[in-house]
Image (cartoon, rainbow, N blue to C red; front, side, top):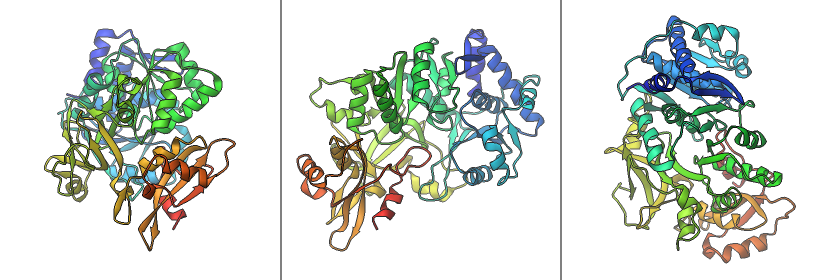
Length: 501
């Protein structure tokens, strides 16, 4: 089944429901949304795009992004969403590697991209784009569940990004798991797109289409905390996806403004480590609005989930351990913690997180060697380290490449980071290994201090010694005004390692 059939079905049943907004302004009802999407499909066909082809989307968040998804899918082609924060040369690599026939682009990105890519551009903010989607609509193309729907490119912090093959069936499975394991979606809800639609926020659009919810792209095109607070009060109830760094920023701004997020129904967070101190602070301020998911591009949004009740619970004897976890396996996957050979290890023992199920990719785009290393006997080797407890809660330690081996002992940076974040002087921290002739690696910490604080290494040492084993405490502390991060908000530990070599 083509994902575009979900839009067709909602348009048939609830065509007069409001569907797409830019800020407070309605752009489409569901009937108009479907008509425009299939008109765009016809317009793209007139430009030479056919079933099985790829169309790149290099845009800031806007209503045209949703039109791009469903127009391309309705034609039977696949989307290649590209984070708008990437450098044009990085975008050009993805466009070339994917073999995209054309690129839908917003004006702010078009000129720079045109200098480095010869692939034809479709300017979605210009009048001729309206002409494109006002073609006589095509019927929705038939697609198999295994057909390519979305070609997702990994962040590429350790090399060129790889294209992850995401099928219609994978997104459908993730969507249904959202209802089973994360949250209900009501037609009265609005989904607010602040996080890049090229990633998890966009992956969640189909289930909201299927439920007939409202789709709101902020007028700013991105993440503005006050804009969100205002929108929630006037257009709520709102659901949204945030990376952990966004949750931290949003909490800080909302507390400074004295606003509790009225109108926000659900914030789903994931895409990176959420530190215990940060989510405790967020729940204390906003209340039970948070759900955590853990996934990867190779299994989008669908490995595990920590429910709203678990995130908010303060009564269970092990509530802190559960809050520090990433929840239990979602209903559409199996989880395993494997040793070096992939064999399962007992509860509580750290190993590599492995997953299999319908949301797992069939492989990387035109990269059989990388596929063979990542998919073994049907299991996705995530490269993340963690353990399962007796109740099935999964706790992550770190990426396998980030584990510090000091004196022959494994030290997981996140454990040290969690301890340091509990100190009042620490606003952000990242822990890495520094080469050591004596121990192999030393633990060092890069700290962003809280406002008004000064670095007091003795106090941080004492705090660590009170909370973690002596051998895990940092041998050195470095202060930075901010941690280096990639375009997805993930800390670039490779850059931090260079600073302490």
